[in-house]
Image 1 (cartoon, one colour):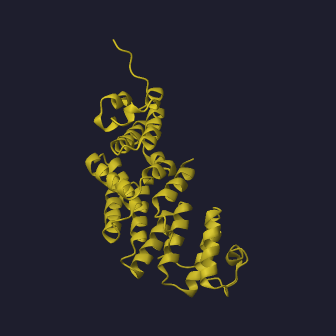
Image 2 (cartoon, one colour):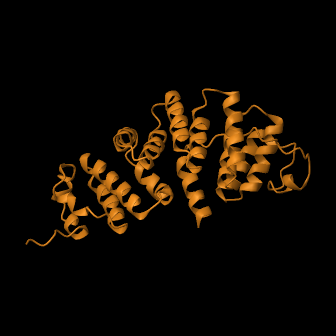
Image 3 (tube, rainbow, N blue to C red):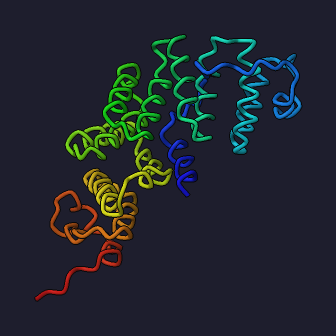
Length: 264
């Protein structure tokens, strides 16, 4: 179950522009068994075809074979940061944090302005529960690309697990400005599974509901309230007094989801 959760979290935390690989040695075989795993592709195959094959294998969760494709491609183009990042992502999906970190670091060495690899180093730190390091890497990624909703969302979650709520909210608000769906995707993708307790998951869901409620986004607000309720959020009835839910209180579905307390 933990491995499944890790795969889900990686899918959401890693930047959506899945890009390139490594301080880890690239496989050295020229026509060995590892290349046979790359859908029969040979060392003569052009780099773009190798990359596309690796992407397809990664989509099929054939991560080891995907790495083989990226490795063959990297022997042809060792400084390709996109390939380096993609191989790092495959390593993450195999739960090999050391290997993933090495690939991302190699990508950054090739291009210090490569924001995706910076973000993904933050993912590695987050998965290791080194939240201060995760914050540092996410902030570096944002310094390179401030308009990435996923980077802001990742940084917000790193602040959230450290209980730095004001800073978390600021990042989530910015993420929502850039992409109204980013936090829903983050939740569904597995961030909540990495939050340590049902109580914290419930608080996380309620926080998202508040932000969507304040924006007047009733559908997403109700979705997050449902999650908070399922995880047993103890102050769920605050929706009837919290000004952030003023718009949501006009929707009859709220009463069905959170029945008002009986009057004394």
